[in-house]
Image (cartoon, rainbow, N blue to C red; front, side, top):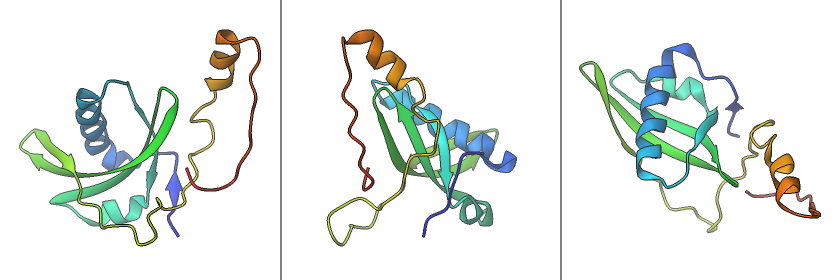
Length: 123
């Protein structure tokens, strides 16, 4: 079972910053890191780190896997290869609490009413 943490270990912060900056440079939306998956596994490697980050921006949250390699004072970032998912669905992983705190306020300001549907399952 994946362990999601909202706090980024201080040792990983430079790599996480490099990964989100690289991702945002390629995206039309601005994303922030709201969690890290299995941080202990990322801390175990030193030369090349594989980071599984929970990113939220706009109206969505998603999990992305990055390879981050230190190159002198900077980092080289790329997407990590994802093995095919056996049953065709993404692994179950809840977004961390607070990732979308302002979403409801923003939605209410845009519309006359908002319908909330609660579902516990895949995201």
